[in-house]
Figure 1 (cartoon, rainbow, N blue to C red):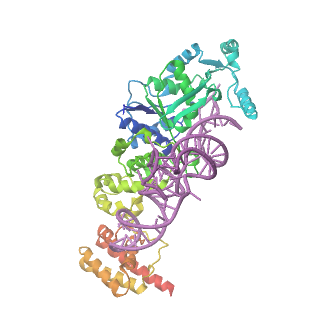
Figure 2 (tube, rainbow, N blue to C red; figure 1 turned 180 degrees about the horizontal axis):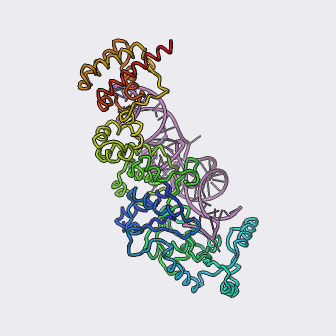
Figure 3 (cartoon, rainbow, N blue to C red; figure 1 turned 60 degrees about the horizontal axis):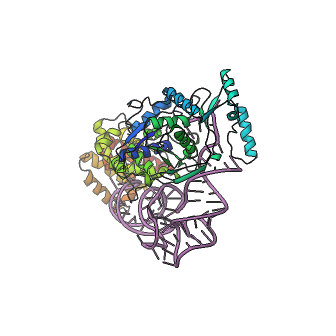
Length: 482
RNA sequence: GCCCCGUUCGUCUAGAGGCCCAGGACACCGCCCUCUCAAGGCGGAGAUCGGCGGUUCGAAUCCGCCACGGGGUACCA
C-alpha cells in the first residue's frame, strides 16, 4: 500500500469525545499502517463558536492517546501554519482565482431573504438552494459592494452530476441540481469550511481525506472546487458516525463523555484505542484484543464498516480490564500513583498484585485499597454476621483468629487459614460462607482483596484491632437482636 | 419537504452464491476453580441475516420495491 498522507482537522469548538477521536484514530492508523504521515490542522474559521481552551484540550487528548502527529501545532512542518485563522491570505487568493474563472460569484442577499426563500422552496417541495438572484445582477452587486454592503462569495455549482469512488461506500452520485451554491467566503472575510478544507488539503498534499460520514453531502461542493482550481482531488473516505445508546450521533450536548474524562477515571489509552478501533472496523480475524502495534499491522481502510456503530460502554470496560491485566506490573504501579496519591512506591508495589484482577478502571483501586490504607470503613448496610453463619460460629472464628495472631503474629497465615477452615467445618459451616466474617472484620465489606493478604498488608496490630472490634460489634448486634 | 448513506444475536462484528438451519466478542445465565469479590476455564441461551418480490439448481451474499434508522439540507464545522 502506498503511503497515505492524511489529516485530522478538528474545530476548536469544544472537547473531543469518542466519536470525533474514533475518526482521528482511523486516519492515524491509515497513516501509520502505510508508513505515511498524519497531519493535525485546527479549523477555526468560525469566529462565533470558538472556545479558547478547546484547542489545548484537543492536543492533550491526542497526546494522551499517543496519536502522534508528524505536522501540526507544536511540531510545525513544511506546510504550516496549521491553524486556519493564520492562513487567511491563502484563502483570499484562491477565492480571487475562483471569481476570475467565474466558478464563484458575489452575493449581497440578506439572511432574511435567504430564510424566506428556503421556506418557500420547502412549501413547493423543491430542493432548498440559493436561487442565484445575484448571479444575474453582478454589476449591481459590484456597486453594492463598493458602497460597503456586506457580501458573501458563492460557489457557482456547475451543471450535470458529480460522483466519486468513496473508499468505504463505493460510488456515490449526486445530481448537481440538488446542490446549493455554497458560501465560500463569509461577510466577515473568513472562509467557510468548504473553501478552507479544499485549499488546505491541496496545499498540504493530503492524499486521503478521512472524515466523518456527515460530510458526504458536501463532498460534491468540494469536488467542484477542486475542478475549478484544476486540482486532482484526494481519495475520500467517509467513515460512519458513532452513535449513543439512543442511536443518535454522539454529541456533547447529549451527554457524551469527553475522552479526557475517561482518562481521569483510569481508562488506559491502549484500551481506548482498542475499543475505538472496534467501532466500525474489524480485522476479519477473531482477534479482539489489540495492542497499538497490532492495530497498525492489521489496519486497512477497506475493512471499515459503512454503517454507524453504537458505542457500548461495557465493551470498553471489558477491554480496559483486559489491558490492565496485560500491563507490565511496574507500569501499573506507576499509573496508580495518580489515583492513590498518598501511597509510597513500596506500598503500591504490594498493592498491585491484589488489585489488578479486580479493576475495570484504575479508579477502582481507590475503594479496593481504602480499607488497607486507612481505617476499615464498615459498610452500614452490611449483614453481620453474614447469612449462613450463626452468631456462635462467627464469635468462635473471631476468637480463634485473635488468639492465632496474638500467639504467632502474621507469620503463619497459611497454617492459620487451614486451622480456621477446620474450625468452620467442625461447626458445619462452609469455608466460603464462614470467611465472610473475616472479610467484614478486616475490610468492612464481604467483598474485596484476599483477606489474609489484607492482614499481611495492614500488619498484626491493626489486624488485631479490627478483629476485636468486629467481635465487639457482634456482641452488640446479638444483644440488640434479643 | 428535498437529497444522500445505511439495515446479520441487546451491542460491536465475521460473512464478498453452496464451507452458514450463520462464527467470534461484550453483556446475560449456569458449572468448575476458590478464603470473599474478581480474574480464569468450560458450557448455555440469544439473529426465520429489516420486509416483500425477483435472478439462480442454490442467496445473509446479486437485482428491484417498500419499511425503518442515521445524516445533510446554514454567512457551523
